[in-house]
Amino acid sequence: MKKLMYLFILIGFVACNSGAQKNTEVAQPEQIVEATIDIGGLHCDACVASVEKGVNSLSGIESVKVTLADSSAIVTYNASTVSIDEIEESIEKRGYTIKAVN
Image 1 (cartoon, rainbow, N blue to C red):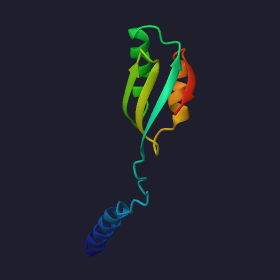
Image 2: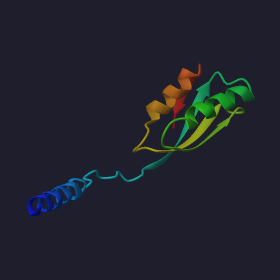
Image 3: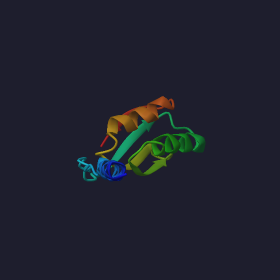
């Protein structure tokens, strides 16, 4: 009976320590960046909504404001999560062109 009791204690000890591993991942600091993107092909409010929806679907986007009058988007994003290339690609996937990035 003593051997059985020792066995249960040993199993309990091993089971409790198996989940005690340290998390060694280092979180990257946020790098909030604001970029103005000139977009070709915006014609109406539906175009504006489409671009905003596409950009907002990306991880790391803080805000996006598309203006039809000057065909541009002001995007605030976390550069450690998403790149300007990914943002431009999401706009191009919706059928619009990128004129320039400031």
